[in-house]
Image (tube, helix red, strand yellow):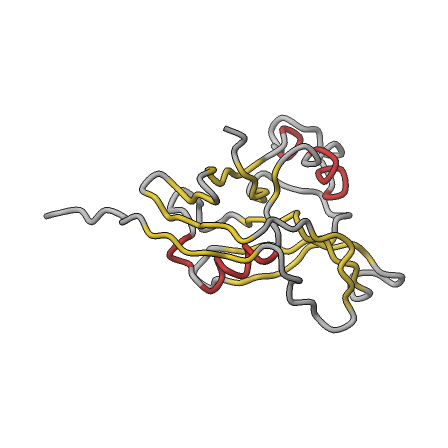
Length: 163
């Protein structure tokens, strides 16, 4: 039996445009990234020739952290400040084109896109910052989590490799 290999395909995605914003939400931060070339290669997803990696902070590992030392989303933003994070426009592209989601991502993982942070009044009585994620499971979905939540090890941030 012949095993099929993923064929390299390339498409352009606009990371500069304003993202879709739900009613009653406000964009708190949106890191623009230009119009980029997205390529699905055998060894992963590439944006403008840089491999998309999935960042997990050491404090997201429950086995290594005590019960009360898991990292919260707002702390994770500071840890990601020197990294090239991807924004909601990339999440939306991957949602519409799941064939570009790397096979290496487990169906149990959530891929977060910290390049866009919203403020919503639906998460808490006086509002809360939230970040969107894409779930690759059988019921593929895009959702959001409040930054006040603790991040576990299967919640990864989509970033670009620096090399």
